[in-house]
Length: 223
Image (tube, rainbow, N blue to C red):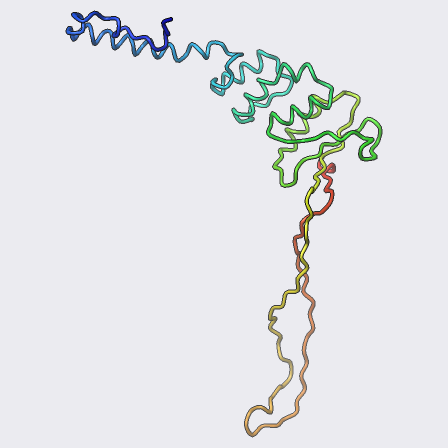
């Protein structure tokens, strides 16, 4: 079987014509033009090949496929994932599975917790995510509300540390200069033994120390 992508007009020329520089040049020019056209053939099948489409084609493709939630500010990688999963997401829409799958399209590993699993209000749910996860709250909140059940209420994210977090309490000592009030002399100086009054001002310094969160950290107030 002839593969049109790999075939060249030059290869089909008989030996006697390959000695003609004009014919060879024409054949090579046609081959170059044909290769350029062949490179676009796969892109013509838009829906089957989102992974090779340009960014502006992805935007048009999402509109054509009526993707439920789409943001043009998404990276091309995320756009391709959303388009690839749009059909199955639409089929599962309204289920916990659709929310988790939608979160995966934006590279967020989230697990749904129903209200009875954390003693929440009826028909409420929250999403458990790994610590130190970077989130665009505005986009993700819209994504969740698009694919959740209409009767359900999203309480927010919960971050669970699955490993033991050890907080180390330390004492720090540092020098603080004090002003000397009145007169102060020391008997350590040869020939001196003078009593004087010494007044020291006592000050308290406060500063913030950042500690890691342990157990559960709830961010529902963000919304």
